[in-house]
Length: 126
Image 1 (cartoon, rainbow, N blue to C red):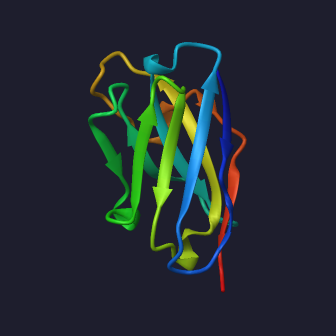
Image 2: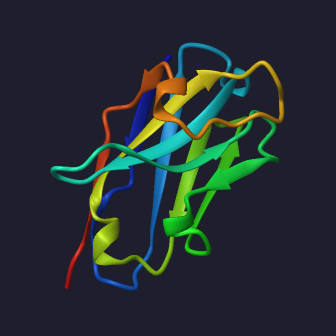
């Protein structure tokens, strides 16, 4: 599985960005997809995850109400819509994939994921 993330950039506080991650190498609908982020000097942390079906999903408390995860299985792409961005959201954002045995399961622990993209940098600054 190869993952290619895009959509990062420089945005002012309160602004929005949409990250995309396109998967190749096997049927996208087999995989649970997740987004994680890592700021300088910090551990990689969970942001959001979505089940194979696109139904059940989870977002971290720190971004709840501001970030939304979605997927388009026909396009083999997972999205992270980020609104009302704050300086503390600045980080490298990584997408991740892991086979899911159920259509409704999602994973929130980075150790659950086998495949990772290269990351896309998000900087929130005025």
